[in-house]
Image (cartoon, rainbow, N blue to C red; front, side, top):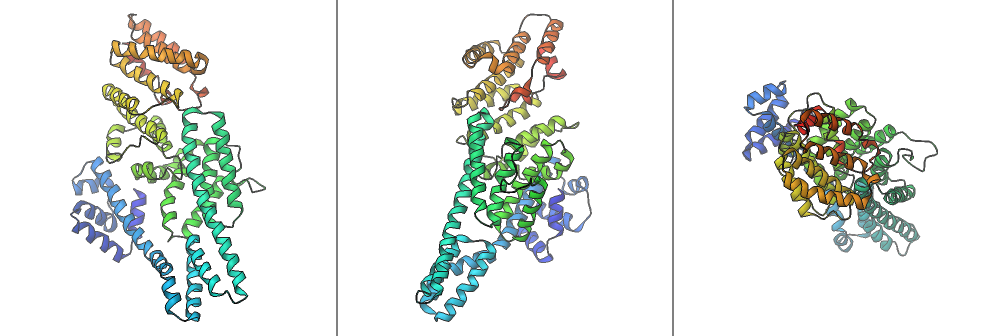
Length: 484
């Protein structure tokens, strides 16, 4: 919320009036009133909710939508000068054929400076190609030929860096689900490759792109890896964040950087959370949470977005007052569209959904979501994940006392355990034993003692790949349910 208030306070009077009028004209009166209250009145959230006559969930949605409207407006304002430059590039041929040579060269030189400021390398190649041809009979022809070749190479380097970014986070999704050593090696090769490319140019854009991987790799894959391999001394993560913030501030008109800001908020959150400094991560958590649905959908080319859902679960587990996670899920992801082609994201999103249902005690709905997921996608590429999800489904059947479905599913789980090897899935073996004890005819007191003893033997620290059971605590409340 602090982010929204700060943005509104910094709006000029003209921008504020334009946004307010736009909201009123589009029949979004409550959003307009919220904007007015945040701009003109010093009211806390409770008083604003009372003024607007909305409940907390509706208020959250209203805030989020207002945030989006303001961001859309600001982005349009930012795009205007850049759009003007691109129009000028598109009209270069018209200028060449209709203006005197001196005017054409002067125009292109001015355009060159503007394009450098925006770091538009692709458009710069068009300018240099034209200048090269215009100077074919002068010594400057060689100079512009060199600049043209350099920017062609730089443009290809940017394209290659963007491809590596996408490949890295696609591959990390597989690593997250299976923790395979060969996948980790492939991630390290991509990490090295993007840094080799970034080393070839003094480019803030390549630095930002390589930092997306460098920071993530340092936090999640290999904490011993240097943040920037080309540095002779270790560069701290905080230094890298500070440098990126400065770049984004310096190039405030760059719409790409404007959107990538949330990626670095997310990385800051992950950095502070993995180092158990959660209070420092709170602000960044709120900033990302306001855009959770959009972040999950649209930023997978620049980071591993599903990890944010795991962070939400971990924060919920640590919280003394977790709130209604199911209601929050329904509010935040009301318009979210699932992607079955992006399997890791699809699996983690559905696990988050089932986690919210599980904590609300809705085990029948939880089982339905898991069954639908198993029917919609094939998990043959990730047998570990398939086994984890099936066992999580068995837990729901156990809590629902559905003996037939439980026994049928347990036969399938046991076959897969035999194929995998008990030593490789010790925690699953223990969970299966707990579930069998729960559905046995033993007395409740005897069940409780056995289940408690078995749960104490479970060591999930050994499990390096994704498992739901890291987030489903076998503690008093669940143990009591299983002991009935």
